[in-house]
Amino acid sequence: MNIGIVTTWFERGAAYVSKAYEQALSKEFNVYIYARGGEVCAKGDPVWDRPNVTFAPGWGSRIYQGDSSMSRTHLFSWIIRNKIKVIIFNEQRDFSIVKDCSKFGVTVGAYIDYYKKDTVSSFKCYDFLLCNTRRHLSVFNWHRNCFFIQWGADTKLFQPVKNNYLTRKEAVFFHSAGYGGFNCRKGTDILIKSFQKVKGPSRLVIHSQVPIAKYGKDIQEIVESDERIEFLQKTVPAPGLYYLGDIYVYPSKLEGIGLSVSEALSCGLPVITTDTAPMNEFVTPGYNGNLIKVTAHIKRSDNYYWPESVIDERDLVCKMQSYIDKHDLIDIQKYNARESAINYFDWSKNSGQLCGYIKKVCVYRKPTKFFLFLTVKFLIQDFLRFSLFKIHKLIKYFLLLSKSYCVSKISRRCDIV
Image (cartoon, rainbow, N blue to C red):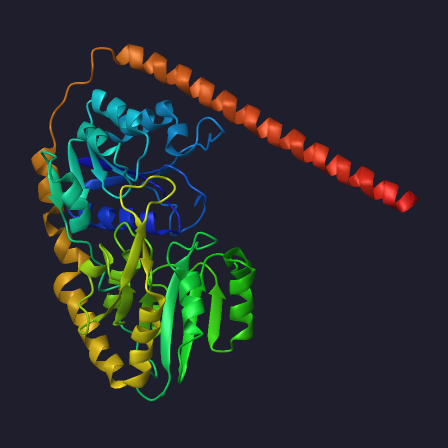
């Protein structure tokens, strides 16, 4: 049987989740990837551009943004060409295309990550749902085919690397900031400020995919003035740079699955993270890390179902300080971190039932009688999307031209003066 995954497909967390599903499903099925698009296109990248991957045309505009800009005719030609029977959508926000796939006779499922209170009921259009955390399961357990698969890491890929942490006296804290920026969902800014209050032999290594300037001037000044902080700006494929640290610090405000938490544990790093789900589903305080107290919850601006957590910064300092004051804790919890990953958060074991779930829900569904009407509808929709995309590009081009013209005119006047 042929299965498709519609997803973002480049160096970022959501794509790695899809990769994990691809590997698990490949044991019994032929898996095809429909790269929906995103901030970056991985076309030509040997890590992401493979024979089973099809890249969607980028037709984004001011009216059609994100997955709503997807070409229906391009997607359905991919379904027909590859004889796709089941599609798993990863973080799909436009439900209309899911309903169209269902009408087309395809069994549709969703990997649960992004939803709002007013969109939860819309997930009934899916034939099945895949929840990787108990938090998500608590919201969608009303669905007739809602499956819980405990998230985990590839414990063979994410392995401890022998370093000199046993001989050195300093504690090295590591943090993965991702695309961070001003919103700092992963708590990078809070961590940098809190680290200023940590005393004793220690270092902080931050891995970011964007420059330090993106985090604001005050954060940049702290990083540049503190010799104990090392800021690394580069894109690194899995297993990443976890080996650079002894303890993983992740004071995240909000997470879908807490991807890096399970990866860090698998690499043998005890984790200091926020005491809220799903992060606290992975960490047992005093065993494989520590949890930071939460002082408040704030609703996110986009009305995401779960609020953001505000951590107790003093407690974060205390948790980091404990590994400096009691250096032997690092060695003990490093061992425990790896053990917890192998025993509870090993994706190859946890995803063992996935193929069985897919077989259970795969139903033969005749395409709608109005297939010809749908085809005409898709062609009209795509014509509109493509036209608006071209208009949007032209407007941007003329705005750029007018801007450069104005700049050159001002500079000429300045030269005359």
